[in-house]
Amino acid sequence: MLRIIISGVLLTLFCCQTSHAQIGTNQAQSGGTQVPTLNEILVNNLRATLTEQQAFIKKVVEKTEQGKLNSKLVIAVMRYSQRRNARFPFPFFERAMRYQASKQGVTLPAVAVLR
Image (tube, rainbow, N blue to C red):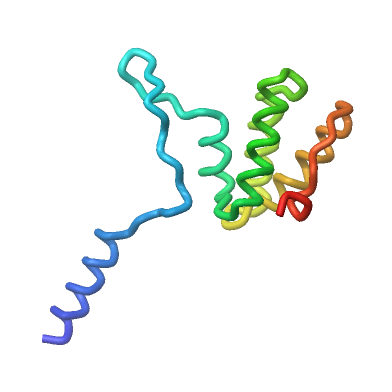
């Protein structure tokens, strides 16, 4: 009897998991396929749950759209930070992105400043 109850609880937990930090894709469609924006890719892959983290990512995306940062560089830094720490990649992304941006003459604010 106890096994049935535990199995039921575990089944409920595994079936009903939700992720509140993820952002769904816009309805921007390309031939019937939804294409996520750079902002959505970064927020989801970097697990940016705090408002300040999402504001930093928004600044990075703005600089990319202005042509000051290369989107391939941003994606490469994102992947680097995921390799460094898969559970908490954002701090590595922030540090590496600020360094790479400064090498190109672009200033990005620290997350602590965006509060």
